[in-house]
Image 1 (cartoon, rainbow, N blue to C red):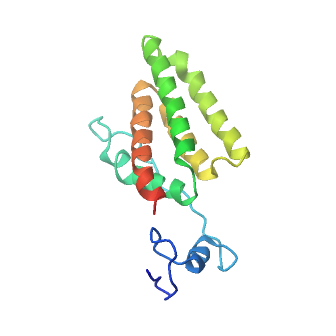
Image 2 (tube, one colour):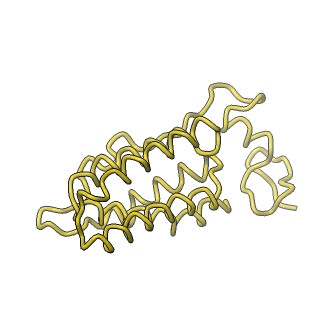
Length: 167
């Protein structure tokens, strides 16, 4: 049987810590201060593009992994994440079918934020997910290029999410 750093047995081999250490780290009844998981303070401060106007590697790699890790740690379900990604793709499809008229789909991005707020109030998704959506929506509203950056970044988060949600 696998053992934790503290010496206690780990019942589920998929985990790296015992239940007691997990509770301490998460701030449960056995722990001290509650661990508050949030997006990095500098998340998307550089936007989606580099100095030459190309999508930055960070939105595909490091920043996407950081978001996926936070969301998985907060027990967001892959189903919820995929549902919101599908909504974003539906907005993208409306944009394409509207002859790339971005002004026609802007209200859909505002409604996207509203839908996330509703799910936060129901306890379906976390406040960190709302922060992720709100920061990205604020950038995506600027124009079609930024909107494409949001779609690509969200896809990267979705791709890495499974890596972190099974740990």
